[in-house]
Amino acid sequence: MWIVRPILDRYWSLAAAISLPVVEFFTEGFTFHFVDYEILRAILSVVCILLLGHSWFKQLKYSRGKRRLAFFTIFLSLVALGPVWVGLNVIRFYAYPEHCECSFPIFNAERVYSVVSILMDAVELFAKVICVVVALWAVVDIARWMGSASSSRDKGVRRNS
Image (cartoon, rainbow, N blue to C red; front, side, top):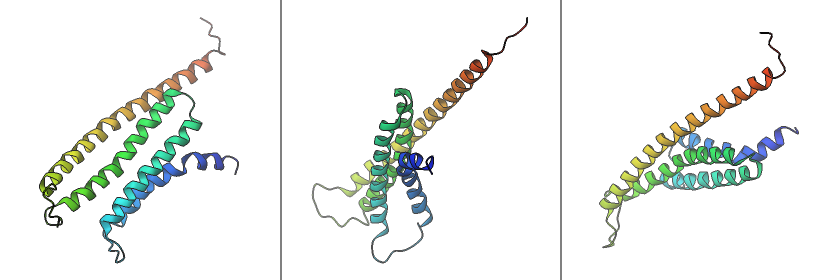
């Protein structure tokens, strides 16, 4: 139990923030009579972003250097782009001209819909770029770790040449 408690303290919010969109994905076809499904998606998006912020503040306390904190920040931003996209999708859903019953002269539903669609495409592109950066950083980090492990192992071995 003494090993599990620090791990739970450090990562529970990250695990919850990753698992909530998975639950949302599997409950997509269900109908809820007490509230609109898109409202639930908006609340889920906000809760996930708050949980990821909590996880980042926890990592400030536990991180072992600026490089690790930078890597974890980039990873969390990759995870946070999912809830941001879901939130933008909810805005796009309500800005769709058939769903919008607004009569404000300032509010133009078509313009909001097109801007949100462009933002969603930008979020997707940004997520792909961050995914490549995280993958390359992880490969370099693993290679450095393996190199340092093999060099520290070779220090004690004398070679007769």
